[in-house]
Image 1 (cartoon, rainbow, N blue to C red):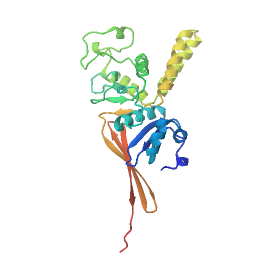
Image 2 (tube, rainbow, N blue to C red; image 1 turned 90 degrees about the vertical axis):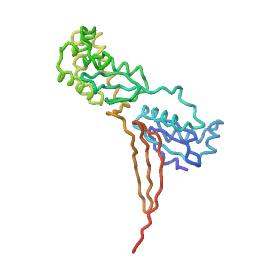
Image 3 (cartoon, rainbow, N blue to C red; image 1 turned 45 degrees about the horizontal axis):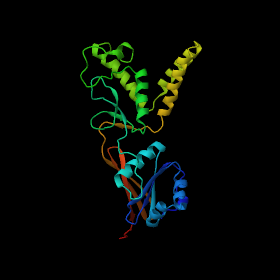
Length: 280
C-alpha cells in the first residue's frame, strides 16, 4: 500500500482500490494527505468495511477544488464504487459556448458539447454561468438572438446598448469579430484590459459621487476576479486521447496512463517495466 507520509498536502482526488485495482471508494480533498489520514483513522462502519478490502490508494492532483469536484464526479459516474454515496444528481455541468461556426457568433449557456465552437468550463454553478453571461453582455455588445440566421429588424437589446445591431448593418463583420475575439481572450483569462476598464469606470463614478453606479462597477470587478479560478478552455471538437507519464529508477520504469475522453479524465492505469540489458 502507498506510504501515507509521501502523499502531498495538495488538492485532488483519491481512490481506495481493491486487489484487482477496482475503486472501492472515490473522494476529493483540499488536502489529500489530511483527508486520506482521516479515513485511515476513522472508525465508522462504512469506512471500516472498505478499508478491510483496500489493497492500495491512488491519487490525482488537481489545480483547485473545483477541478477536484468535477473529476470526482466523472470518476464516480464511470466506476460506480460500491462504498460511494453518489453525488446528488447526474446532470451535466454547464459551459459557456462561443458559436464560432456562425457568421456573427453568440456567447451562450449550454450543457452539451456537440459541434464546432469554443467552450469554456465546465462550471459547477449554473447560476454563476448566467451571471457571467450577463456580465459579458454589459461589456461586449454581441447578439443573443437564436440561430445562425439574423432577424430582419433590431430588437430591444440594440436600443438599450446591449447589441451592436449586425442584423441591420450597424456594425461591420470585422468590428463585430473584434468584440468576439476580445471576449474570447477575456474568457481565456487575459482580463487586464477589462479590469482597467472597470476600474476606470468605478473611480470615474466615485469622483462624480455616483456611488450606486460606482458600487455596480466594483461588484463587476469583484465578480471578474472570482471567475478566474477553476476555468479551463476546450477548443473545437473535443477529442479523445491518452496522456502517458513515466519515471525511471535504475532498471525499473513505471508508466501512468490517463484516459481523456471528450475533455475529461475517465480513468488511469499504471504498469511497471523491468529493463534487462543483454550484453553480446
